[in-house]
Image 1 (tube, protein in one colour):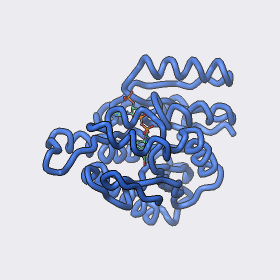
Image 2 (cartoon, rainbow, N blue to C red; image 1 turned 90 degrees about the vertical axis):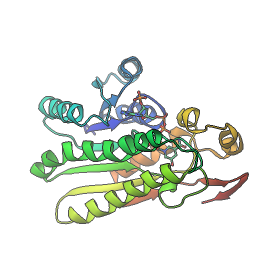
Image 3 (cartoon, rainbow, N blue to C red; image 1 turned 30 degrees about the horizontal axis):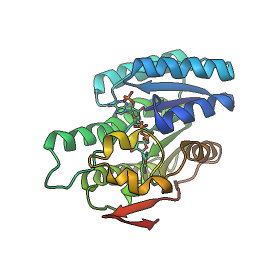
Length: 243
Ligand code: NJP
């Protein structure tokens, strides 16, 4: 369908795969991330494969002014946003005692305040049309917490709290609010997250493919529900538990 689907964090991993898959189904993905060169390449690939023009905007979601400007521009150009996928996010896995305050603040700035800023920027337009779907990429880490993930897990717990509360606040509207809770996925996420290198090595064989996650998100867009929980594993030390 020709839906306008704004994807934050569309330059890599889940967001990048999803953007192409949205276009393959005839939707218009609007790509947001900080890396202009990667967005340019993604948009060119989408055009080549699907013939769909995927607009892209360089945006740091933790810059609230820039978020407001970008969404104003998107809404002016496309008149509506049918789906917002709040996907931009990252982790730095570290013990609580070793985690640096600036890293802790950085994760909250992007994973939580960035998501809040994008949602607030798009919600008035959705309310005006009484239609829309906000999909937050949370995590199984938003339901549990394991060693070295206290801060990342806390950001995803916050994402789930916002998702669940906003869904109830919008109960009398036709705007859906959903969460996606995956376990580990094969994306560049772990290049940055895994400070010791052990986590990735241990969990690699258990990781989901981004294409699988993207397919589940497309199903969610077609048939909105509160949340989807994808198979995954959480590591505690060198032991991994199936979720
Ligand atoms: O990670 P990656 P994933 N402003 O690193 C963007 C969650 N998740 O696809 O700005 C705007 O390939 C960054 O773009 P750039 C995870 O928490 C993952 O795996 O150009 N964008 C890139 O496009 C996250 O919420 C796993 O550097 C910013 C994208 O975010 C989501 O899935 C498991 C930004 C990250 O792409 C996507 O992660 C799970 C900023 N300030 C949940 N900072 C997993 N991979 O195992 C970063 O349960 N980005």
